[in-house]
Amino acid sequence: MIDRNLREMGRIPDHLLPPPSLRLTLDRGALASNWRALDALSGSAKAGAAVKADAYGLGVDNCVPVLRDAGCDTFFVAHWSELAGVIAHVPAEQVAVLHGVLSEADCAYARATGAVPVINSLEQAALWLAGGGGRCHLMVDTGINRLGIAPGEAGDPSVQALKIDILMSHLASADEHSATNPMQAELLGEAAGAIPHQRLSLANSAGIALGEAFAFDVTRPGLALYGGVPRPELEGHIRQVARIEAQILQCRNLAPGHAVGYNAAYIANTPMRVGTVSIGYADGFLRSRGPGNALLHGDRVLPVLGKVSMDMVVVDLAQAADLGVGDWLEVPWNIADAAQQSALSPYEMLTVIGRRLRVG
Ligand SMILES: *Cc1c(COP(=O)(O)O)cnc(C)c1O
Image (tube, rainbow, N blue to C red; front, side, top):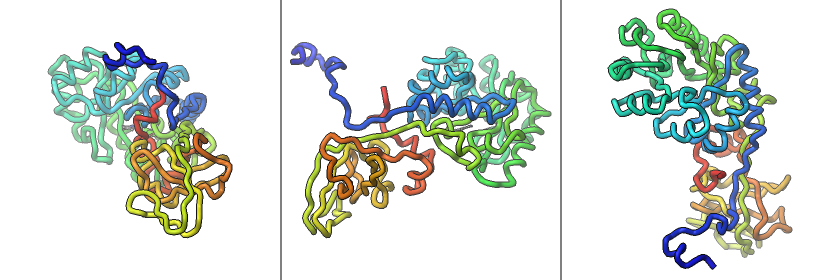
């Protein structure tokens, strides 16, 4: 029995929480190995790590200590709100905030924490300098037209007055064979000649695979750290990091004509045994991963039937007569395959992983 006073206060001891019916297992060794591989592939440059969006859905608290212990000392987040989670594990001066400073409050927060803003425009440069300036990074837009000063703004006094550590740009099509890749590298090289800086950075995961001319001093892999393979050159270097499994909650026998799930999107035409499994779109198993997709048990493939619900999915157990309530099925998160089947990008596959799957 839970102590009645505790229960009335809404405080229930953590150790009483029963085990969950879905789980994400992180292969921390694979994560560390991926960082080391990307660092080695970066040649004379050193690899940092993009840990924005809660380390691409895998959890900052899980991933940042592993990356730090592997040797990473430069981390990238997008928002100031993402900073606290990261600096619980690494010094703030190792963390860059990609969205930069939009207000005096952002500048004050940067100074209070010691984290480093990535300045993206002349307005941001002026704002940062007005508050006293200090070490920052600078993004130059060389063709993605998202964030960053234009190369033509390099001579602006506000840019020249900045104390720039990393002068960076971002590739638009690093995962493709594209003439814009060398053009962007060349533009960054030109900016480097016009803007005082300590270090240069261009390559994301796919950019690392483009070779030495793209590595400069610091690389910024994200996706490949977490098991994504954006270019074939990285195959064989990158190991799968996330394994997701869900339990069968209930089994039932369908008669011909019985329909499965919302809107009767699947109708049995023979007697069949099916299992209801504890994963749904709230966990990141999106509806686009419904029909045509499958869960796995060892080598056995269990097709998904009907529409994915918020918390559940139904699979055909024809290939798995021995399985029943409580058995664990693997949810394929082999990012390349699963992404292709579901028309999601591998980035989306990872970043939609739901809260209920965040490992503690
Ligand atoms: C997200 C991001 C990265 C990491 O890119 P991946 O393709 O995941 O390796 C690097 N640099 C910037 C500026 C980013 O926004």
